[in-house]
Length: 332
Image 1: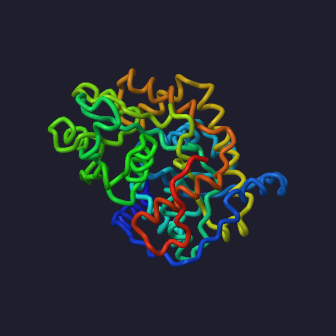
Image 2 (image 1 turned 120 degrees about the vertical axis):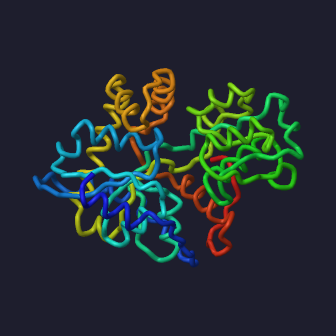
Image 3 (image 1 turned 135 degrees about the horizontal axis):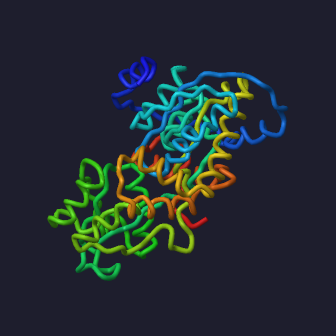
């Protein structure tokens, strides 16, 4: 790890709160794609640190693009760094330590609500690849009434997904089915399911086989329902000012990532090797399953849809009464 990477990790290791006001500028979420057609190609060299917020397959497009040398191919000297907290990445970007980076959509939008010029310029997963897993004795939706669903935090992505799933099952979140916060990551929530602390949980697809070993089963799968919740789940973020002042750099990053998508989908062996390296596992069954769903889900044209941003605003409104727009969860 370079000194630069170490300094960033130390600086942005603590959570940061963002307060929202009543301003949200919707235009510009796809500004970078205009740049691709407006600006001609130009040879340049730019150094930048590029962060990613999670150790999950949703971030693998950044890992593969880096490992395949596609940033270098586009004259970018990129240092790839893991900062496992979306708001910290947004803070680093607003402080000037990061210029364009992987990030969490909700942190970018929340910062925009506070008046910053943050913008999402690419989105590689158009929905959230999660499932609702229940105990073996819960066989149909109505069996969940009066039972609890485990999430990691109110107002978080799991909260949003839990509410969406329950509504799709014609159940009322909170009123009929309470949500219970279980601190930690997926293993802690799976253990809570096993021990009867919760009756169901929202779980990422690669972790489902682990829950199934303890008798869990999938009630609903986001990737198998007719209209999945639109959500920008793997986003690249920057600021409008950086786009304005450094259009060539932004264009080159997006070009590299789009080529990375092509390689992800067509180079299975290399992609699985990269997944194993960054996820730190040699479980080939897990890696093959992870590749199968993520390669199918990965968008070749990584636009950020308006409906996806609406879902982010809905997520913010769960815990933030100052969000100007409070749309109801709805099918697109």
